[in-house]
Image (cartoon, helix red, strand yellow):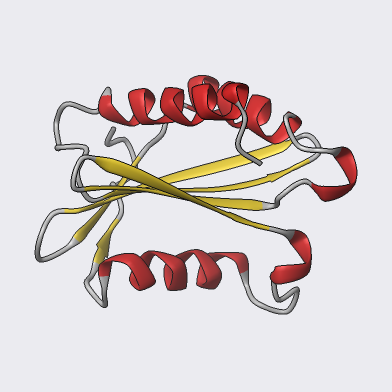
Amino acid sequence: MENDDTEKLLNEIGQLLAEDIEFPINNTLLYAELDYGMVSPSIFKDIGNQILYRIPDLDAFSEVLLDLWDEQPEGRRWAEMEYLVRDGKFDAVFVYPDEIDPDEDPMDRRTRIVRRYFGDKPIVYPQPGEE
C-alpha cells in the first residue's frame, strides 16, 4: 500500500495530530472507521493513569482520511485504521472489512482496540459542551 501519495497523507495525519498542543503527541492513537460517505475518526491520548478522548477536527481529518482511503483500489479498501504515535514515530495498521466481526458492537470494538494499545485504564470522554 505504500507509495509517495500514501506516505504524504500519513505524514499529514501526524501533523494534524500534532496540532493538539494541550497534550503531547507521544502516545496518541487515531482510530478511524471509513466507508462510502462515512468517516469516523477518534483520537485517544495515554496520559499515564488514564486515556483521554480528544475531539477531532472533523473537516481536517475527514478530508485527509478520505484521500488516503481513495488511494486504495475500490475492491480492496480498508475499513479501519489504527494510527499510533509513540517514541517520535508512527505506525499505521489497516484493517479490512473481512477482518472485522460484524456481530461486535462498534463502540465495544473501539474500546477494545484502545485498550490493546494503552492497557486497561479508564477512558475519559469530555462532558457535553467541553472541547
